[in-house]
Image (cartoon, rainbow, N blue to C red; front, side):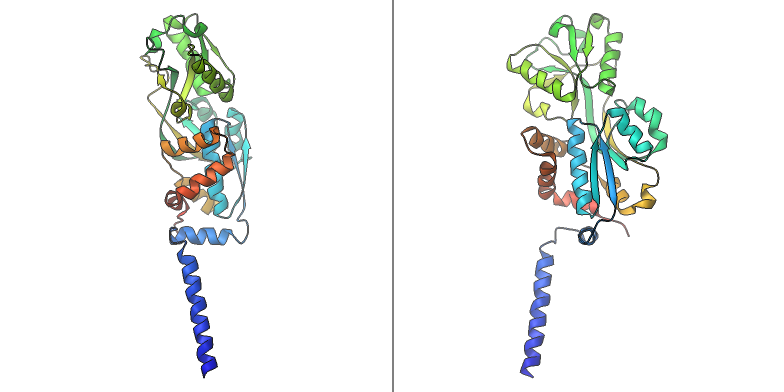
Length: 301
C-alpha cells in the first residue's frame, strides 16, 4: 500500500512539474503556444521571403522570418533588386514580401504585378517619403526654397526606386529645379554621404523616407512639397503569391496578422545600424515584444 501511495505522489509531483514548466510560457495565447510547440518537432514547410535591401525591409523581413521560424517553418530570405522582388512573388519564385510601399513608391511595380499576387494590406502605417535636408539648412523649408544649394544635386538611392522617380519628377515640375540633377547610388551610399555632410555641416539634399534610423541619428526635416509630387503618406504592405493560403494556411495567416508600429521598426533598424546582425536584432525585438508577436501567431481554428 505504501509503495502504491509513493507511486501516486511521484506521478502527482511529475504532473505539477509539467504544469509549472509550461506555465512559464503563459505569455503565449493557447493557439500561439500550440503553433510554436508543433513547429518544434519539425519543419511545416519552406518559405522564401524576398526583399529589397532598404533598411526598412531588412528590419521587417528579418523580424517576420524569425516569427515564422518560431511557428515551425524553414525560412529563406532573398535580397533582390526592387523590381525583381515584385516579379519573384508574382511568379511564385518567392512566397511573400513585406516591403510593398503604396500607393506611391511602388506604384509602377504594383501596376505591373499587383494583379498577379494577393495584397494582405498594411503591416505598417504612417510611412513618408520626400526631399530631406539637415535642420541646420535653416533657410530651406520647402522644395521651392532650393536654388543653388548642395551643388544643385539631389542625392538619391537605387535607380528605379519610387522616391527617386518622384525626385526626378520634382526636378521636371518645379521651375527652380530646372538646373538640378538626381544622383542615384544605393541607400547605404546615400546615408554614408549624408553622415559625412552632416559631420562637416555641409549642404545636402537627399531622397528621404521614414521610418528610417537616420531620423533618430540626425536632425533632419522634410521639405514642403506644394505640388504634391511625393504624396501624402504611404503604407507598407504584405504581398503573397497566389495559392499560399491553400498551401500553407498557418503561414498565410501569420503574414496576414503581421502589423507593427513605426517605433518598432525604427528600433530594429537602429540596432542593425549600430552593428547588430539583422537576425540577432530581430530575435531581440521579438523577445522584448512577445505580446505583439503572439497576436501575429494567433491562428483561428
